[in-house]
Length: 131
Figure 1: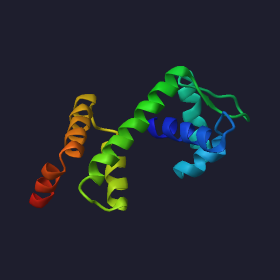
Figure 2 (figure 1 turned 60 degrees about the horizontal axis):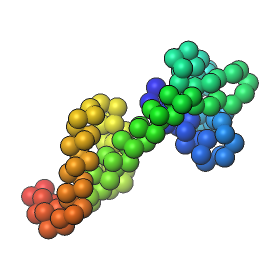
Figure 3 (figure 1 turned 90 degrees about the horizontal axis):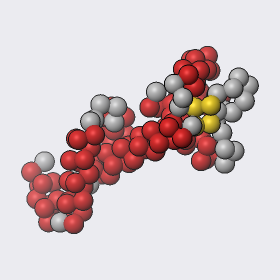
């Protein structure tokens, strides 16, 4: 569900159409159009998107709030791992796995750590030296 909401928002922003087409969601996620349609219908039933067959899908206010939180979580985890100089492929794979399981409390800890490490480069270097 998170991946769908995230991709719908990205597609809306990228294409500038105000909606995401199921075929584009399918391509982005590497999933069949039938699977995408099924999930869009489910998300519509849950009040997260407005889905109409053969038309673009839009996010509801609730869906937009969740999609923005997902993107923020993804960006914060990426930023945290980049501090330690990991390669982008590793960061991408790890963030994709972590982001679906990290709790709000743990994300708050990571956010605080990022802020502290950015403010104290010497501390960051000491930590990197231990890795």
